[in-house]
Image (tube, rainbow, N blue to C red; front, side):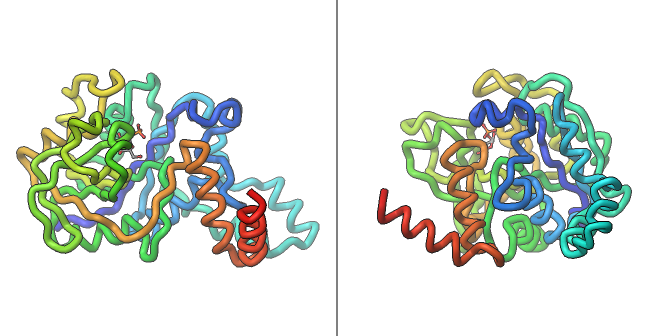
Length: 291
Ligand code: G1P
């Protein structure tokens, strides 16, 4: 079985749901306490053993490349001011040289098209996809849980979790066939079905392990829901010829692409934060009583 070494993080989206905050900064760089949302997703990938990250970027996303580079002026100033703690932290969080790639999605044609843009860098090996809009808080991380399952099953794996039936039109939804513990075999999957047509209330969470054969399906994929080239549609076709499982992972996900989801993520990471955790918990309690 081939090891999962590379991950694709699509970061080309416009962030329209949180405008005007995302007019001049990429939505992936919005802070969750003291780190950009994207850093948590990169950490999840690294924890799962990922060695190389391919960012699929677009226009106005230069801040992401700068964030994963050294900032000599800033580092020199911190050194001069003897702020060694933060300096060390900046240096530790820097990816090792050569372990990131940036490819451009020139036209926003959909998630499926964004993943296809990474095909040359991924090459002929299985890989992970993490959607940075979604933060998953869990121990171990969601991708690490998926890799554990992959080591038993091989093939393709998607993470799923349960949602209220009336929300199925916001997500990809799977049609489960059978269940073994937290692992499902599937009959199919569909992107953003109306609640009445949804085959289950198990949504695709935004974490995937895919075989490289997906690229051939993506290349031919016609636009689907929202008139976009959908990853879910290409996966549904791949499923007919390649092994596919869904894992109901253990943890909590936060949709940082929405205002309320982002707010919830900030609160969740704040109450667990080493420096401000106690203060954040007390503050939220007080605000809850007053609201
Ligand atoms: C994407 C996927 C969808 C998945 C969702 C998770 O949708 O297409 O299958 O359920 O992410 O957040 P998007 O949020 O880009 O519309």
